Each structure stands twice: as C-alpha cells, then as structure tokens.
Length: 67
Image 1 (spheres, one colour):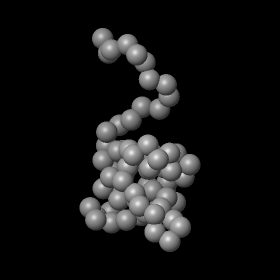
Image 2: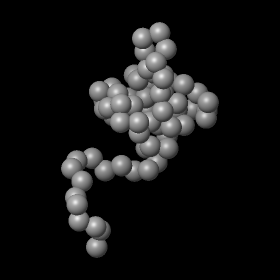
Image 3: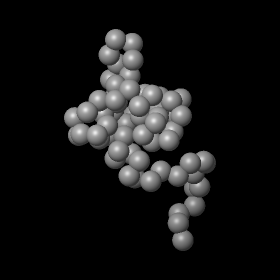
Image 4: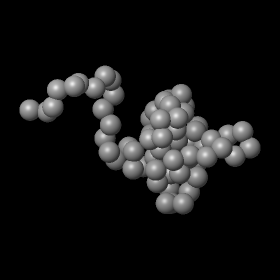
C-alpha cells in the first residue's frame, strides 16, 4: 500500500482482518479517513495502517487507569 492509495471496504477488511461492518463503524466514528465515491467508501490506506499500528484492543474499556 502507498500513502496516497485508496482502498475499498472489502480490501480494508482483507488487509486488517476486521469485518466490513467494523470497517464502516471505524469510518463513522472518524477513526479512519474515508470518502464516499459513487456509492462506495474509499479508505485512505495510510489511515487504516495507522489505526492498525495503534494496536487497538477490542471490547469494553475500563474506567480505571493502568497500574
């Protein structure tokens, strides 16, 4: 992937291992950059890569600070 490359939700799902529904959730939450083009979402590959590199943990978040 190049920095300026745009990929589809399906491609993002394959690259990341997340479901297409989760990719769309990340778009809605503004956690990855994407734009609509002709009825499909195009995701900035670098934005997805940065999100994956941030190592997000699934599941509910604790209110307690890490010890």
